[in-house]
View (cartoon, one colour):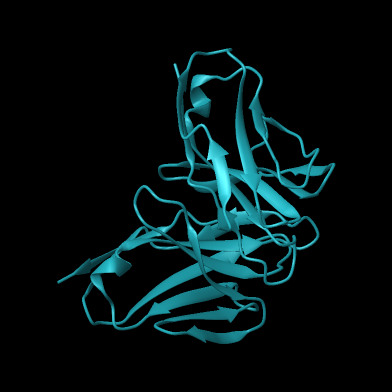
Length: 114
Length: 110
């Protein structure tokens, strides 16, 4: 089944404790991206990747890192989480960065930073 | 700056037609997307417009006017399962960033 898989789905952590949210897609998509969704603010793009070893900042990249060493994986790293990073996170992929490529979203990861 | 505006909430009756508007101001344009998001779930793709005009897909249609920075999503023959948030998103040109509106929560009443 074609899908985008995120882990963990739910996480409660404390300020400053490094964490990684994994994202994997099995559709051989070139384009992958991370979003956070907050009430009243909608979905905001954190980082995106056009292909392996090619990443770029979205609108809210501060406090996050990403890497794209393999085509299928695009982990989101919070080196020192803070309470303002409490949010619902979505990973998404698309066949390419352009064209009619729709975004396929993972199920979301709800992160709480205490 | 970059901005996408859509109404926060709309209510309609089962079987009716509803139009959800979206206006945008972005630096560059490379397509406008509509996504549906049910409460507690991930967004799912509904439609894509890159040229002016109407795209029809079953009960759903989407319209784009690039000169006006305007789009709408038209939902016909509303069903209870259409109760969801509808997200308007613009993909910017050159950078392939996506800018999302805050979403329109649609309630369909029996």
